Image 1 (cartoon, rainbow, N blue to C red):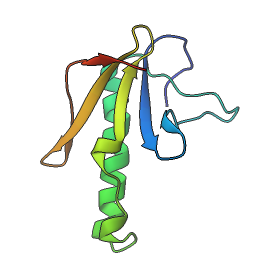
Image 2: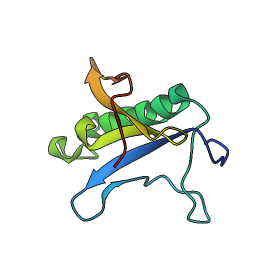
Image 3: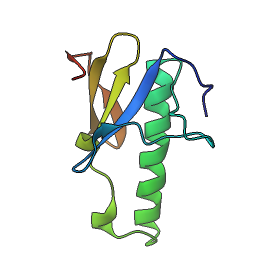
Image 4: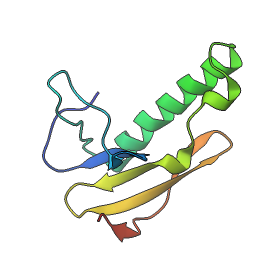
Length: 101
């Protein structure tokens, strides 16, 4: 996991109750912030790979995976959001589109 820093990139996940939030926390309830966009993408890729392996092994229901559209990566310095997609099982990051609201 990355070091805690005040600038960098956050992985945000959408929930109906909370909207877009960073659910990756350290042991002290501080959100993780990745130094680079690639580090954030790689972390999310690892999570999707783990979930897919659990589905393939029968440890997780096929419909109990996560939808890539419920994730975004936010640049902490600029507030710009990167939408995500899956292509052949790989997390693909779009160019920054809009500032966070």
